[in-house]
Image 1: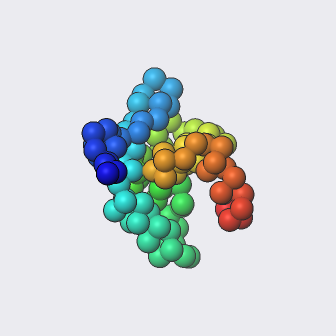
Image 2: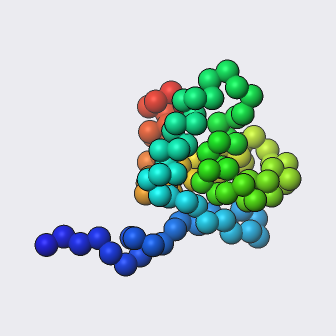
Length: 103
């Protein structure tokens, strides 16, 4: 018998950014909403960063991160970490997938 229980059902990954820790919403519904919004945003002014981080970390966390005025490279790394966590991948695995898809 196979079982999925305990932390796999309730635990949420976290990312530390400076001295702040943000919980990542890794539910399937969030991942699907991110993908839908990315597809729908064609030609709109909202950035991929905004969609991914707002959905996965929540609006309050996204606002706080934006107020930090981080470099593009740091934001890119944060998005990579968030997407890796949602998909239960290592950051390196996520980087490989990102490169393969041309993103």
